[in-house]
Length: 258
Image 1 (tube, rainbow, N blue to C red):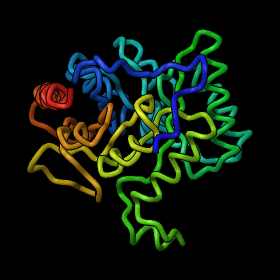
Image 2: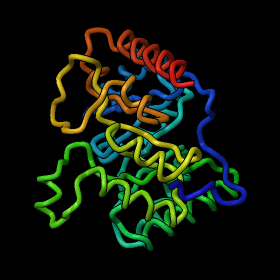
Image 3: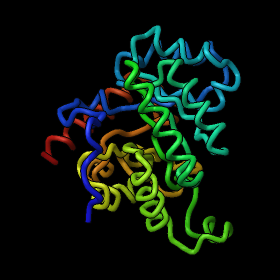
């Protein structure tokens, strides 16, 4: 049973009419700003958002986020914050000043941390900003064995749902989950939740270090709103053409879902 709609004054952060391209998030998982700049030059017109993760952000800080804004694209700041509530609260304020559209935190950071993060993002939006906190449930590189080694008895799907429900109760409205958990999260959280799925691989491609993966079509069919794609675009012979192909597949899947 769904937990319900967003709180009064909140709105869904993605239009249900958004095109496939707008739902495609390209991960700038490279080690230098020059490499990132070249990828943005080639791919920027084919995607809706750029993800800056730990590698690029630790190396270049604000230069890496400014690169995204220079090309007029939305910034997905993927730092997966997991710390004491006060530290995360301050970090969320700083992320809002960087112009991030989305900022990831680990749902496993606990209720107080999630509550603080959501509250600081809401303050930023009230002041004219656009930041949304995104709760990362279970990394796509983990499976049941990995969770068990951490003392977690649940399977990834059950654990993802439990973490997402907790984050929702503390005010978070956007979530990262594998495509395999998207349907369950959609059922639990309802239509206003924004579900973002990494672990996306074109049919027939290598899964690399990911253990819970899907095609773009499979992700949309499961209820995902946006997909995150890194290596399949980055390492393609023609990154722009790969991005166009993925966006077209999203469009077709969305049309079939409507």
